[in-house]
Image (cartoon, rainbow, N blue to C red; front, side, top):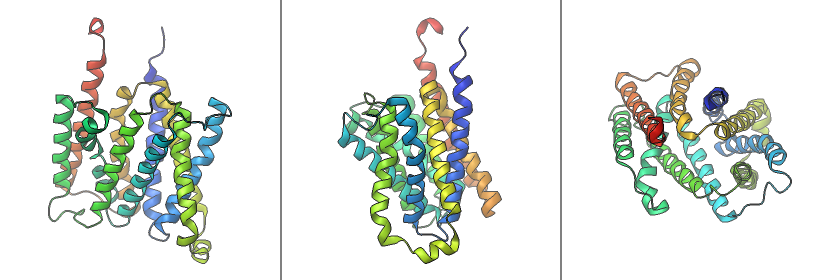
Length: 293
């Protein structure tokens, strides 16, 4: 009997989620002392150093050749914008609530799926995205910890992430290793070009580069583990576990920054998680062949 795909994919996916949540916590710590541009640069350089040998080993010397280079560049640009928006917002906002707001991306996916992909959203997706939006509104209520102008950066990050996901759907005929490489190299090149205008070498040396190196390692390992997980098991099986990142973010926020959501914020976060998990479970059920039901 063949092993269930989750048996091998789930540990990888959980490691990826922990690495990426640790990445966000490290970024929040670093943006207090470093330029946002330097922190994002370190993240992409580290990712590229990890994923490039992996892509080369799996796909051969032509791993960088894309069938749709323009689409790859645009998709990777949206990923870079999502990172800049999210980490820029983290400078001012609690980690758990900020992470939850970025899960507004599925709502944007539903709204944009028709104009970009010409796909009509199912009733289940409409209901789930509406519920998730209600959860975000609870988080953004007057008087909450996230009522700050920086929340606009998080909303921009969620929109950029949604566009990144939608364009990923347009690259299904590309090698996943090529796509993984472009995700890293575009951010690396763009941030390296900006680095001479944003870096303060004296300050950087006084603070130390060790945490920046950790940032790159976490990004590279996180994306490496996630890519391998998605190559082993369908996304519909893994998606519900994505929301564990909110739990990790809550734990890191409490342990590192003494931040914890109040009761209403926790309710909003719970609604966001429940809507996403319920949608993933429904879509997994709908994908099963009739004979297996």
